Amino acid sequence: MAGQSDPHISLFSAEEVEFMAEDELIEIVPNLRMDPLNFICGDFGPFLPQIATQVPFWLAVALKKRGKCAIRPPQWMSVENLTQVLERERESQGAFQVLPFHYVEISRLLFDHARDDIPDMYMVRSLIEDIRDVRIHKVETSLEKFSGTSAVKIPNLSAMEVNIIRPFVGRALQAFYKHDNPEKIPDVDRPSSAQTRVANNEPRRPLRR
Image: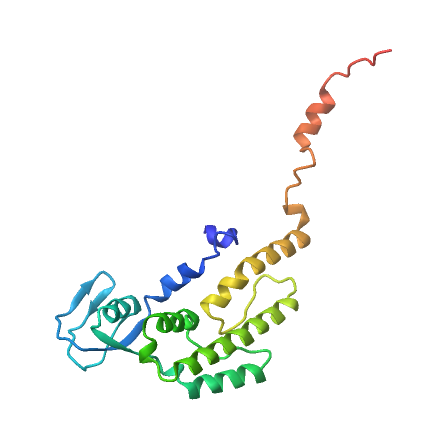
């Protein structure tokens, strides 16, 4: 695949990563009655007033913008849980706490479109930013210890964190591979054996006096 061979192609923009996160399911509480909605990705509904149901994030945002629902933040976004996650992230320098793969994008979408549905919104935002900063620092520390290998395994990274380190790791692995297997890497500055043979068979011109 192209993304596996070229680290630049495999790098997504923040908007593209957020777009992929919008397929995650989120719980909403509708304030209207509506028949099921049928999409290629699945069927959602029926929608009944004050009866919670799960829909893709993009649909939740669309309904929220029209004043048709409230969005329930996921349980991991509570102040209590985020405080515990932050403490554990700081205590365990070599490990990452388990968080949703798109925790950065999900929280950003909620802050942008449903801040009135988030209890203690400013505290939640501050905790998530602190968690993100601590995890990025741990990623950078892990990369400083990086050594040549055929694979890199850092469990529990999020989509944003993987997207940040993918280009560097891809180039580093390629550099280590070239260093360990120089005979497999073509040298464009060295003439091929066929060219050398042709050159040797050509008649030599007499030197001018």
